[in-house]
Image 1 (cartoon, rainbow, N blue to C red):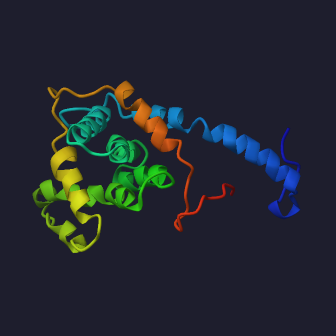
Image 2: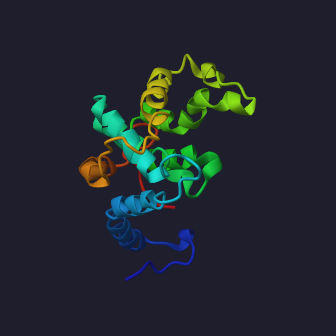
Length: 192
C-alpha cells in the first residue's frame, strides 16, 4: 500500500502512518547502504600510498588503539566516505551522514577535518598551513587536531596492521542504530 495524496496539503494521517512504516523499514537498512558506499573507496589510490577505503579503516584502527570511544572510532571510519561523490567537500558529506547519530563535537571534528588536515600539506600549495588556528577557541579544536595529527594524517601506511571492516561492524551498527536527534536534543521527526 502507498499514500494516496499527490500534494502534502492533501495528505491524511493514514497516509503518514503508511509512509512512517516504510520509512522505518528503509531506515533499518542504513548500515548496509553506508558500508556499500564506504566500499566504493576501495581500489583507486588517487596517487596515495593506500586506497581511501584502507585509509578509513586504518584511521579507525589507530583511533581504537589510542583508546578513542566507539562513536569517535565510527567517525574515523566514515570521515572520508564523501570522497567518492564530492572530493572537494567530502567532509560535508561524511558529516551529513553522521549528523543524526553523533555528538555535536564529533560532528564538528568530521566537518572540519579537511581544513585541519591541511596543516600537514597546505604549505606545498602556497597556502597557510596554520589556517586551523582560526578555530583555536572552539570546544572541538583539540579533538580535531588530535584526530588529524595522530590518526588521519598517519594512516597511509600499506604495511600497517589495519583491522578489517568486519571488526568495526558492531560499532557501526550500534552508532547508526541510535535514534536521530535534532539540534535541540529532541528526537527528530522524519519526513520531507
